[in-house]
Structure formats: C-alpha cells, structure tokens
Length: 408
Image (cartoon, rainbow, N blue to C red; front, side):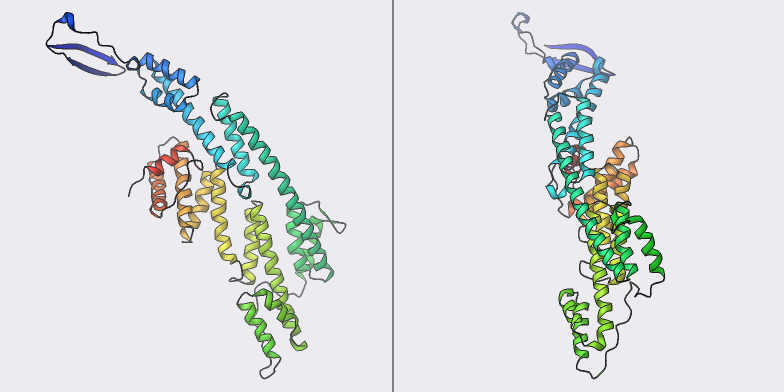
C-alpha cells in the first residue's frame, strides 16, 4: 500500500514526501526512525557542538545545511568559521616562509590575521595564541636584522660620501649622502648631519664640471698608436660588462689616455654603487628609492651588469606581491598589471597574484562587480594554463579553491 505524508514546511519551500511500503500487515511494519540530523534543530545543535569542539570542517558543512528557525544563526557561524580558517591560513603562509623572504611588513600582516582569528575564536584549532607569539618573535628578529643591516649600509654610504667630497666630486658625494639622509636625516657623517651634507653636496654639485651620468661618445684614441690598443681592450671589456677586467685595464692605460680612463672608472663606480643601493632599498621595501637608484644606473649604462632596466620591472612584481600579502589589493593590481604588460619571464607568477588580488578585492567589496571577478578568473586561468602551482598555505582557501576549480 502507499502511504502519503502531508506536505512538510522547511523554511520557505514545500516538500511532498511519498513513502512506499510493502503490502504487509500494519502490525508488522516497524517504525521508521528519521535521521536525527534531518531535523533542522538537531542539525543545528550538532553543528554548534562540533564548532565548540573545534571540528570546524564538519561544523561548517552542517551549518550550511541548517534551515528554518536557526538559519540566520547558522549563516553567522559559517561566516565566522570561514573567516577564521582564512585568517589562520594566510598568517601561516607568511610565517612559514623561508627566513630570507620574511620582512616586517608581511609579519605585521600575519600578526593582524592571527589577532583576527583569536577575536573570532580564542580557543580555536591550530593554536592561534601560540602562533601569534611565534609571529611576534619572528618580527622582533627581523627588526633587529634590518637595523643591523641598515647601520652597516649607512656607515658605508657615509664613508663613500666623505671620500667623494674630499676629492671635490660633489655630485658623487650627493649620490651617497642623500640616500643616507633619507634613511636617517640626523645621522652624523664626519661631524655633519646627513640631511645638511646632502643639501650642501647637491648645491656644490650644480657648479661642478663633472661628467653627466649619460655616457658621452667614447673618446677617440690615436689611430696608429700601439698604446691605443690598450684603451680599446679596456673599452671592449666595459662594453661586454666585464667590469673587473675593464677596471684593471683602464688603470694601466698609457698616460695620454688617463683622462678617458678615469671617466670610465668613475662611471663604473657610480653604476655599481647605484645598483648596490637599488638592491639595498629593495630589501628594505623602499621601492621608490630603489627605482631612483636603478634608473640612475640605467642612465649610466642601460645594458649594464645586473640589467637595471629589468630590475625596474622586477620591482613592480616584488612590490605587487608584497602589497597583496599586506592587503593592499588595489596597489598590487597596479604594479602586477604593469609587469604583465612588459611580457617578462615571470608571467605565470604575476598573473596568479594579479588574479588573486582582483578576486580578493571582489570578495571584500561584497561580490557585486562581476566584471572584476571575470578579470580575476582570466588572470588565474592564464597562470594555470602556464602550469603555475602554489600551496594552499600561500593564499586564502577561497582563492585557492577558485584556482583549483578552473578548467580549460
């Protein structure tokens, strides 16, 4: 026989259930026990229990199924669980980086995320309080390391600035003292404050009859002189970016070529110092200072060792990834988009973080800008088609899931 059960209301929908029983005596029909979790109240109670016991994955799946009276509360729980998991995952991805990839800015962001997780669920899984202490300790270590590195670099800049000033090479002295002043305006360099020394050397440099950073046409050696061969070899080494041999050869050219040789030696010195400063500023996340240093190197020798023009583009990639992990998604988009347009060799990496930045901005702005989401998915698809892989600890689970679900 067929027994029809009347419609039962679940939330806003009506479900019609039909139970088909074999034609046996009613007295022989056993009572059918319903799954306790088919009852929204029971399911909600089980979800709360799992949440309390830190079984977050199970609790999240259960809260998503709750309807009826506890539907709104279940949604709030689900939102908190996802926020907790995202915060812990992002923070752990930063803390687990290798020591040479850690910096104060990213560790500050990790600390912020751990604090957000603790605010959501202080007794949550994965030891948020202990992880917060670990992140704070790592930050203290990095701060000390950066202070020591900055102190050493500042001392080196001061020494070079004083030496250049002594030789009346005021523009060169300014190129050392001004970055020093930018780091620490009150730094005492030879008894003078760095900021005053920078201003003074800059003013003196305006009247200095020095060679401009852009190299002039190579000086013409004597046509038939045997000694001109020495200068030519030095110039060839310089053009091939073999600065080590070029320096030795320029230092040993005949007297009649000393002026030209000294100009080349000064250019190589300025070039290498600019590249060193650029690297120093990049490590310290002073991106605009790094750009100025690499541009100065490029103005001296665009194709020089270390490729300063490529370094300028890599700054966009580095800064973009840094801004992504710092939560500045709009800034990350700008720099990563610039890098992708240059068609450099790290395109998969850049497209992944560009897509991740756009998708993160889509989520935090309420998920209404569908055009932004489409742009994000296009970038992620480009990265995935190139075979780019990343672990789940590096980005939030929501972004990681979107990336894993991509098909092409």
